[in-house]
Length: 121
Image (cartoon, rainbow, N blue to C red; front, side, top):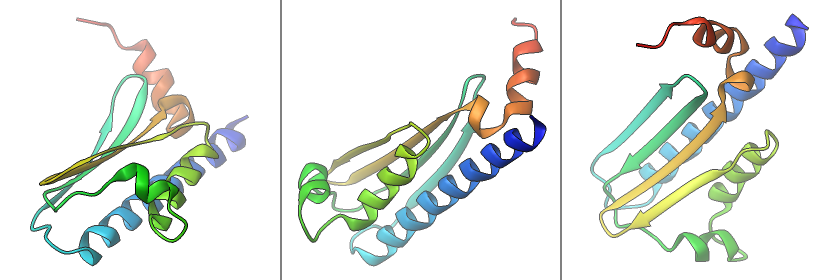
């Protein structure tokens, strides 16, 4: 059981790392972003990775459905699909945000048990 939990956590770590890597690569590759922020939040029930930039924005639907565009976005989404989770994309002129959320039981099973045991104030 511990080995399976560790393998699950390692898989989630790899998926989140690859998503962050691809998102930051996209920000560097596509012009007009002068700032980017990456935040990893471990909440009581989920791990959330947010990547936000101040670039020109894009049409997320067109990028995800176009035959030659958005390959990096599709790869990010497919990586999360393997875990049963999804990638949120919010893009408009001046701001793009990618949000990847994974249940804590997959990302860090030991933290889930610890978080559940903590008293609520």
